[in-house]
Image 1 (tube, rainbow, N blue to C red):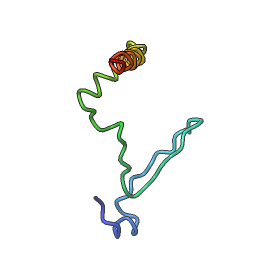
Image 2 (cartoon, rainbow, N blue to C red):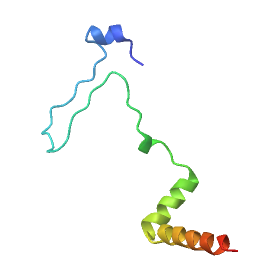
Image 3 (tube, rainbow, N blue to C red):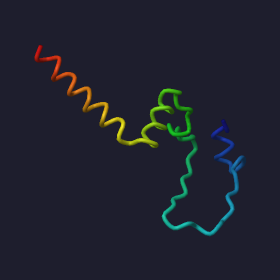
Image 4 (tube, one colour):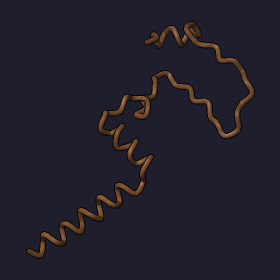
Length: 77
């Protein structure tokens, strides 16, 4: 972490090259880093569920429908 007094004096700053801006992008500059959840490693279960949902998107609605049907069948007994 950089000392705020060093930043206030203009030392410790990173020079950003002025490149041609890309349409639809915004340059975000802050003193503090912004935490992003997508950069944190996901749990193995979450990764596996995401993989299943990507490959076979019909699986989750089918499981929910089967669960609802099972509930209705067992409730009548």
